[in-house]
Image (cartoon, rainbow, N blue to C red; front, side, top):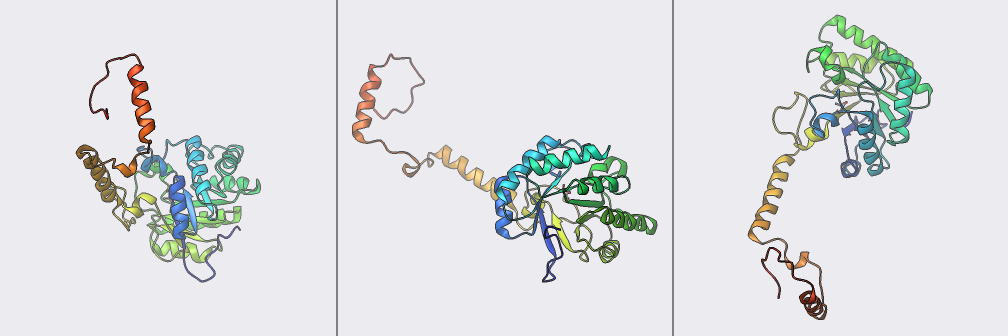
Length: 288
Ligand code: KIV
């Protein structure tokens, strides 16, 4: 497939989520291998409770912004909850919108079992699919919360079988979320396609994190696997406070932020202005 192999130099793949044009440009400039337009957008961008309410229209809008920003990096578009599970036709239709309108090179969908058929159908329709096993945020209500998966041997075996079935169905890569490192390592060793972990330990082919978690945009409690590499929430609040202080103290805008008008044009303007009907107004500073 399409460059989605463990890198030839043996280094792990790096994937980060992005949701807009400027974020995609920055991620590409930073040299990531893959950009995921995750349905985590529902939570981190739209402020929704979980990832079950974001729509395909919204995801396609985010994906198209990201695809225009990242022109050299493969963009993967998450198919949101309710847009692929019911049958193969629905899955193909949604994947087609995500690739055609959203510009995504691949789509991602969650789950094994019946989703194996959806992966096969979308693949056969010509669109590469990334699978997703372990913690499935779209099934959070059935899973009883955000907790580690496949921690019992029998569940680990089921996950391994599902991973194999997804690969056989044509999946080109697999996200493994919140599972023990031993299970992720076994899946990685068993499959030929790359595995990309999030809370799945180091023995996978790549790692993915959510934009807001990497940059420290999220305040409050983070998932165990999240590692902030900056504290942008502080930088952003500081910058906005500095702007507000400048405005309140009259330090912004300075002359260099304003546009020029020649003295002759200014004088002509003031003369013309005095001839206009007077309408009161709020008063305040007037150059004349
Ligand atoms: O939606 C998302 O951000 C994801 C990642 C957590 C893998 O699916």
